[in-house]
Length: 132
Length: 374
Image 1 (cartoon, each protein chain N blue to C red):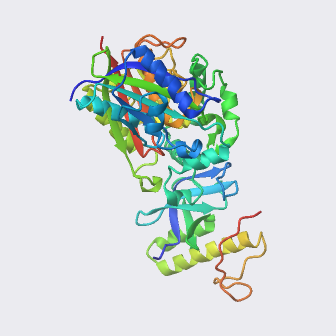
Image 2 (cartoon, chains in turn cyan, green):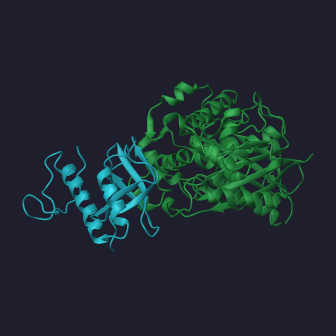
Image 3 (cartoon, chains in turn green, orange):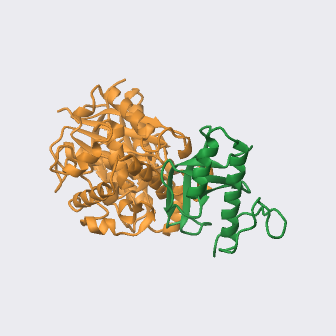
């Protein structure tokens, strides 16, 4: 099933007391997808979240992740949504999410070049690793 | 359907107890039987997770034998954290149906001897497995509800803290409460964050304890006027609203319909404040306040012992404590004591009381109405 690249935040929390198997702080958001389905997501932080705000969504190894959209992305999505090219919008969001996750995985190292290609030429498809 | 009356109500002090679970339940049950001076013809037992917490099962028979009641019918009832209320309902039905005359309902839980992470893990099993796989705990889900309610303006952060302060002030006057000391607003608002925006002092404790109620078909003056149950999806993400509990709304409607009167008659209430914001939101779900108005009542002091509608005179789950399956019964014990003038140190003036119990993250809720008709 294809999950579109974005949703809107219904609510969120950051757990300082995380259950076994999870490391605090644990960030959880409840996100509503276009079409009405609601999902639980993990993310890097909830600081930038507001209820009703649009976030990028990606599914990796069956787990959903949210990522805050930068203001440029949100503006670009708004204009693209006005009936131009939904394809381009989806690609822009996916690219933003990939950029975010590769930065997260590389611990702040330089993001890969545009168009989704990684520096070693292969598609990165691993689950983001929790920082120890 | 015939009327059901309360002939006795007893509870142990909640808190860290050294006694075994069956001992605690016997303490409450035998006290109730002494008060009513009779033998029950049926036993309803409740404990939420005795197999996990104390490694003992077949609990209806276990408690029955322990009480010297191994010859009467006995069942165990469970609806997560509202089990006490569900057990009371089972007793109610057994008498209202005409099948039995005197039912002893006893509930208990023992948890303080187990490490907090393990207690949290056991309690988390009431949560939808998919949401649990994302690390959701009860505080996490409550925080998600609280965050949505704050954003909608249904509660304010200081209101949540005021609930905790009020309930501790009440608990300080209740010899059966887990915590018998007050807390200040500053202490609540500076306690450590559990799941943002909920802090330690917004969350109820882990308690040991037991409570017992004896129901009878003979009029005693204290009537179980109405009971209602409401249910909802296990998964929080399936709900229509994150800030209102349909389970509470339906339970309240059913209870008032059975009792034949509305929320305006309620003069004292025990509300399930496992997390401080739930007290405020539940008052609206029950219909005691219109949508968006309960927060004003908190600010005006209407809910204190001296206020228009005292809420949680016992100290609530926050200060009286939360011994899981015992809690729903302890709320009714408090109402029974309040309505018969036996609430030492915290007496309010009331003839009609309401108890509200939440099971899980509001999947299986109960509202109970008790009326002093004599």
